Image 1 (spheres, rainbow, N blue to C red):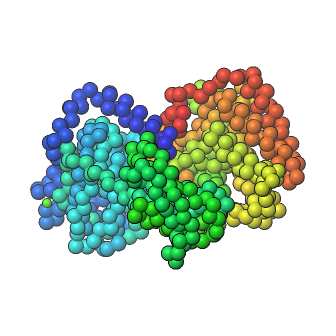
Image 2 (image 1 turned 180 degrees about the vertical axis):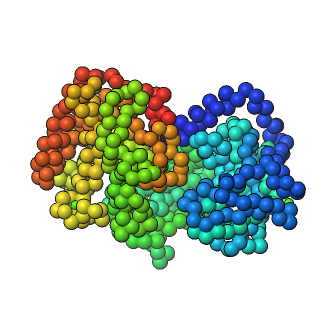
Image 3 (image 1 turned 135 degrees about the vertical axis):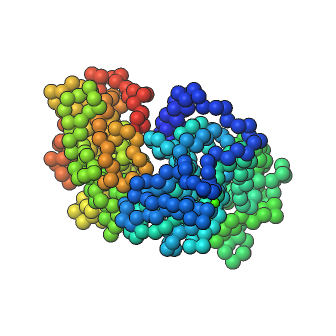
Length: 506
Ligand SMILES: [Ca+2]
Ligand SMILES: [Ca+2]
């Protein structure tokens, strides 16, 4: 997502630079109303609605009759365009709103009125029948004269009526000062300390002399004690700190606290449970990112969704994907793999390192002194391939490996054996959007040396790890790895283009 954001800000900056008529922003001290006719005294202009919404003035408010049966929140909306926003300036966004019947939470937002429809602030208050006033403060991340104040009202099964009044976007307001709650001055690892691992805490104090500390169990009984070590000023926080080392204490338990300098830490555990859960969650995450297969709610409660980018409308599908115009004259079946981020792109380099990490996790379990491959065995990850007698971590990695193999330029074509760097939408994906709902054209991007080496490395690793389970797949992977390696040596400096960042990261 970081990659995407950087790209969008760059785009926004270009838009702002092109708008030479944009007036200079007001001085920070002046509070200036950006919304026109937010009080609906005798007109609804210049507010717009989507064509399925009927709006009327009613008792000095704007009321919108919203149809039922729309799929997305933006399928029914009311809003106002041509809002000017100044980068770094704080805005107070406020309105009154009501909804009949009860139970609706419209999405109020300030964003970009044109593609890529970036959202700079949003809130989804549950509006009541009697109505309430809502007030929010945010800081604009961009300069634009093409801003929008919008209320997205769709996505519900039944029709309802939304009324609003006193819509205001006040610029030049003081920014909200963030005051973090950093807790007691004895700072501990609240996730948990491993019983046999190092155990360090930090004491924030004015004192430069060693201070006594006590480790207490959940009953409040002191189970260990010692003296802290002065460390001087921490350059990142600017605070004078001392460190507390209680690594000699190795007993498991919950609800320990550390006491020093008159302060008691937040409670913490000594144990492995938190890390066991993290380990399982991290591995199980990949299944939810899969492209080309339905995600089953029975395996990931709450994350069920239809298969994305199979050749079913409105998807254009990944079964027959062309290159960017002028880049090649063939199409490839690049179904499968994992989505890379919140957008719907699939990347060989990002996918390559993730695959390598999974394969290496498995390979290390076979060879390291502390390894225990049984914990990655068949049935450990709750995936569709659980029960096929293949370690689940290999099943998951194979979902990406087969995609990586499909990204290789076919024999007889220019740059044969190289790997296309990525495949994604022609333009940035409109978010939030289920993969199965993405209507955009998909394109293969130029083959690169980096992508090719990622393919060579992961396919070579696959060749040795899958051999006990599927000799044909292992042989196919080895062949692809060798072809990729030769192609990379022949094209050692075919780098990605820094400007290839529309619809996906460069
Ligand atoms: Ca009014
Ligand atoms: Ca399995």
